[in-house]
Length: 173
Image 1 (cartoon, rainbow, N blue to C red):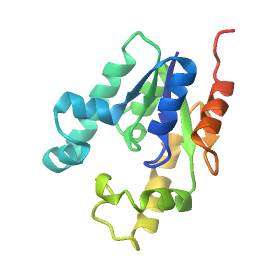
Image 2: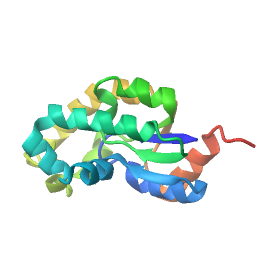
Image 3: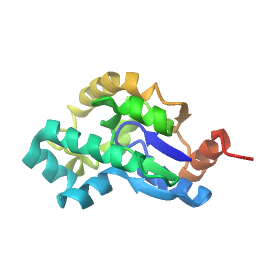
Image 4: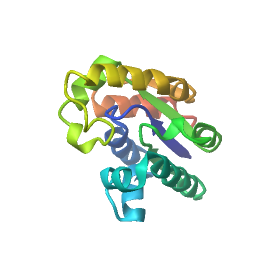
């Protein structure tokens, strides 16, 4: 089975993905880590040197490469991945997609100390973050809501979220 975790940056896709991969004994793949390895630059460097449009093209091509692999895996996607190209269709046709949902307020709380490592947030001051995140989340929500399953992340630890996901998966008996 191929499982993809989607949601806004800071929603816990990578952390939950690692925990879930241990629970299911599946390979864990982080799309951002895959991109860094493939292109030899950090996500921040790719955004800066290539621009967002080219970055999204690299991201789409890498997503297709991963999905076309035959093995089972847990894939943590970038926050913007579902919103570009036909990525959400590709994700839903080939994986069991799960949206890790948080409110803008919860995301701001998680992201306020990570601005320097988040290319889309690095240029913002703390006062600008709430409006930016709320607007961005509004723009992407339509894509996120197309996921096959939704998990409310609020006030749950990684283990609880992973067990909830495990219980909703259509695994062979």
